[in-house]
Length: 394
Image (tube, rainbow, N blue to C red; front, side, top):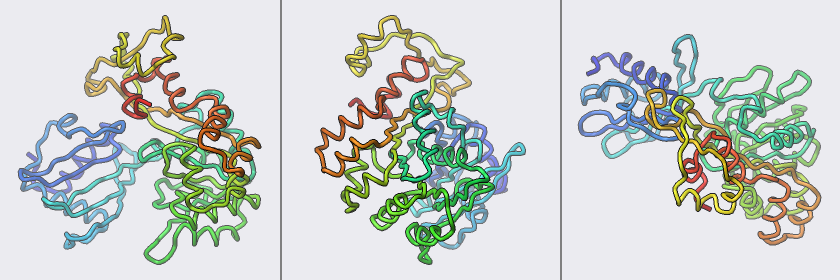
């Protein structure tokens, strides 16, 4: 059992989370103490999977109060949601811990998001892009103007891709301004702006001002509403490069969503330079990787592709101490990238059918999310089971 020192308890939890490569820590108060889970490679696991310890009822309030103090939250407030952050150092590495606190039935529920530079930013070549996709992306970010959008559901790797592009663009010859909520990674050489909606500093408000800051590149954390979308396409059409994320599942859905925001088809078509749709899949653990035979269900998922995969040795992780018996370790991206051309622009302007748009996007991308996933399966990087979990059976 933990001793009554809340500092020891919080350090113990965070130390275990960092050692386990957790991206988030979920803390819930339950009848017999604290229920704690680590999110590792996108999935939640009980803390007992990683650490031999039990948290009892008398540890609960001291640990929660310590977290609230570190995050700058009000320890006397238990009725309203609160947010904050603090710095945590482990083995000479510094982590930013983002804290979200909400009231729940058994007390306050807390989520700690663990962020550090090495986990958030990669070289573009380390994101799981196929060689042709990497070439398209490099061509898109070399374009001096236009709107480049990164799309995908929550937890699909949009932030990592966002910061990796930001890092690739970060050169002394460029004035780069990023507008974020929150700023997840401090970067030298970039003007990073934190929105504060409580005082009216929204994405749209900042966009109006930063245009007068002589920017070469504007990085916009997210397009959330019609006003921000309108300003983004206008800025991209006047000779400034703008990169942003957008919450949709795929590229056709993004076009539909922008139309629903009443963005004129002609402006949308002319301002967007390209779209990247991304997902994250777990990689097979290299320490327990072994050959295995596909199940009938997995063969059905591969469909017509299975005919061209004769002789492929499919891999799967057996589970070992290194991967905590999961068979997986770390994640990689599966992506679809479309650089807009005149045919796609003409189709958007003429409000072509979804079927026509889908066909054009398929021809331009070369590899869909599904194709990219199958490529990773054939290379022995991930499994059919994992791809079905992430992208579904369609």
